[in-house]
Amino acid sequence: MLLIKCLPLKSSKNVTFNMHSMNYVFFNCHINIQILLHSFMFSICQPKLFLFLNSNEQQNVLIDFIILNFSAKQGDLQLALELEGCLEEIQAQHVTKQLLEAVAFLHDNKIVHLDIKVLPNKIVYHQSFRFFLIQPQNILLMEKWPSTQIKLCDFGLSRVLTNQRLLEMSGTTDFLGMFISFFSSLSLSLSFDSCVFIFKHPKSLITNH
Amino acid sequence: MCLHFQAPEVVNYEPLTCATDMWNIGVLIYVLVSGHTPFGGATKLDTQSNITHCILDFPTDLFEKISENCIDLIQKLIVRVSKQRMTAHQSLEHPWICSNHDQQVNEQIEHLAEQIHEQNFD
Image 1 (cartoon, chains in turn orange, purple):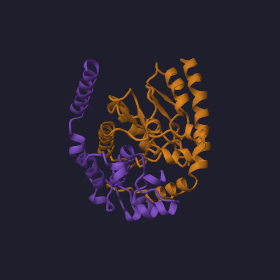
Image 2 (cartoon, chains in turn purple, yellow; image 1 turned 90 degrees about the vertical axis):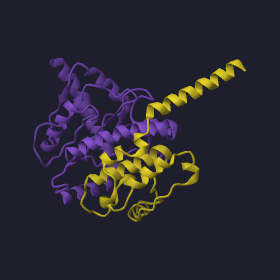
Image 3 (tube, rainbow over the protein chains, first blue to last red; image 1 turned 120 degrees about the vertical axis):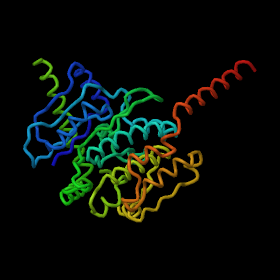
Image 4 (cartoon, rainbow over the protein chains, first blue to last red; image 1 turned 45 degrees about the vertical axis):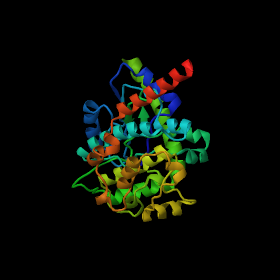
């Protein structure tokens, strides 16, 4: 089991900036191939989805990340909420509408995201500062308010639906259970690992170009 | 998945469907407009029990300025029985989402312009 979050706010700018010339980057690792294929197709036709995929160690397929060529200039929704406490209703409406469009698209393609979230101020302040930095959330903001475009990312917990229900239910709930109980330690160490991993590879890819 | 955003079916180890996402969006709207989570309890167990019983309240100090449409949408998304939740397509047709965003922004800008005008010429 491996949990990958999106890049930390500060460093994501640098990394994605370097990769502007490329459409996407593949990293060697494992992934649930079904989700990969679905999401890869989205990336071409659905601009609202930011793909940052997760791996599943049980299935040995050699691809882990797809990084598209844009950077979230305004950070994520979490940061906006941090700065302002809560959003204006119009802003919330704007975000929700786009989010619903993205989710409707996902549901049409029989994918459940299962990890749409934003934490209010209170909870984030419970965590250490470092934890907060390595724990960006799943909704990215592309431009300045009020016309910002959002992107839904982090398909780490996403699943493909079959027959309108999650067939791998037992596996998923166990997975969720473990994720919850080890939430802080796991996501801290793993997302940190993955960050290092990402930092190392883009450069080598770019120099090869 | 974050504890505060768990749907009842996640807490109770029931099968997950698309409606699970809709619950998450309901909670997300609540958090965005109020800055607080709807089911936050003192402990993890409290939170989980709040979620299972689905006791949703809108404290007046937080929701004073929030429109009825918004609260209505939240109430239709945060529903205990997953089949009774609105789907993504249904909620895209909800009045709160449909109401013209640009028009509201324009009204705000006009209002601001009027204010500035008054300040400058009074």
